[in-house]
Image 1 (cartoon, rainbow, N blue to C red):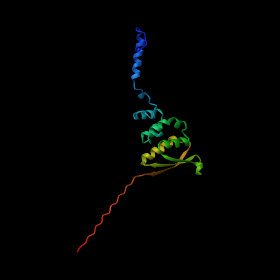
Image 2: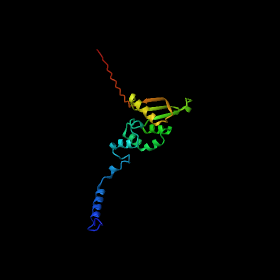
Image 3: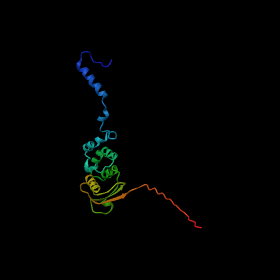
Image 4: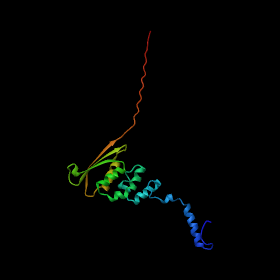
Length: 173
């Protein structure tokens, strides 16, 4: 017995047919807020919805995993926006080892800060610099002024060296 509706009830039969259609639907496409499993093509739309597109980290995120982490932490980043914690957190999400020193930590002018970032295995050019400055400007406290941005570039490579030595000796009699 497939359904429990009375024989002559048309609306119940229509409901049963609709319900059987829902059972055959793939609901994975509807679960877009499961950020780890959603298709990569939906990530820009989620970033726009959570307001992290552009200077708030999306432009600086290079890997798909960084974009997913940025979306998952978007609410927390907005909650603490304008604090040292938010700036440190966004740098951590984007795999940038950054140190933030406030004015009282280095006896500088009030409401100033310095950022030191280690870029590992990433290129650095004027576009990257602008994106980084925009990211910091978007995340920092409005009254605070960044005095110095220090960027340390490091690159690691796997070197394999091989040597060969050929010797010969010539004897004349």
